Image (cartoon, rainbow, N blue to C red):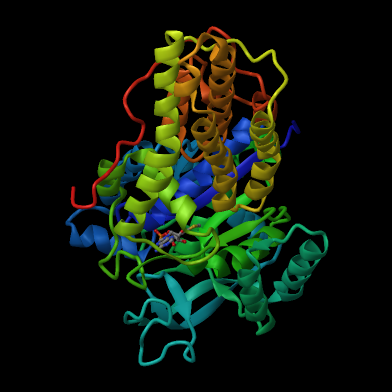
Length: 522
Ligand code: ME8
């Protein structure tokens, strides 16, 4: 284990909306990776949080008849609760209205100001409040935001500017050198190409302050009228949360920064892949290892979003399917990095097929048979030479840690789960072919019965390990039911997955079905 921490982040979400399937998607994906990396012994630091400043939030508060802070305080618990409900194990939760953040933002501005990267100017142009984004005359057609289609405002302000244009070549060098080193800064590749052509098209300096409202972090210099442009404020959360600008936390900052991953949706890659690394370079800080931009969840072919009115909250689905099945569906059915259509029908199908039939049934049958034939006690590991079928299952189990690791390094959750499913499917096949119910009929086949149940239970023990990052609750329950300790305490998954780890004599508990079948019209 290296002493560097494995720091990963999600976007900090706007408080103008409550958590929905889209924001939950990024957060659950990051959580599955965080959980897996803890199981490989990494010192994981997983950050999520809220983006609480800006004109949009100020407006939402006003409409609700609250002060901006009251508004933020009323929404924040909804995110905290939603992530708890989804078993998200973030190590920190940052809100940009916290003192630690404001202090860090001001320290950052001072550093950039002192280094000569800022200048005062005049901004005239178009602004989309819902997207909190500036646009040029050419970008806004008919006064519509090119991103969300809503009306843009013409703004005219005295602003401070960041010399973003000066970083064009350094950014191109960054993308290229990382590519050459085989550790791309932007993933997946389609997003990289998009960013590359944007930067090659030429960068304009960026207005980094606003004077027409006050809901933001004040710049520490100038005439006191300027608050930080909300996107810059938000990006800085990734460093302020881990102690940037706080002399008492310098050691922590050095250990955690640069981040291993920023998980974002593809809607916000320019901020993360262009503006953010340029800001860091200007401040003399390292840039993150990787910005990973996933695709959009689509319902009926459209991006699911609050503004389109088709955003669902996770709670209703969790109520129907349970937390683990919720997490499983999105990570198994939507290829991470690409857009993916989601539907209730597909979710029911995955649930009944993969979870109720394959995984849940395997556990139920085995736990029942252990109870029936061995009074619920794990039999001794087989002493006889393994049969061809035993060998096959052991070979699949032995290959699983490597295949899973490879898939997770590529953030290919679907393939990682498929690897675990290969073992689950083989164990099901094994039970069918070995037919323990026949072996139980005669005394002379009892040793083989014991061997078959031991082997299949061992496959279940190992499969649960690799289900745990995505399905933490049922995996822990499987381990508990086969008499083992806390699966979430595992810090060396590869050795925990070594064949033969299931101790003889452990008590097995039948329990209720892990994934009771769902009927379509229920
Ligand atoms: O952009 N499919 O916050 P936000 C997949 N505050 N992911 C989706 C999605 C969908 N249909 N809809 C939303 C902001 N997301 C800023 C971020 S970070 C320094 C500041 C996810 O509340 C996805 O991760 O609008 C997307 O990038 C993010 O929510 C946008 O969240």
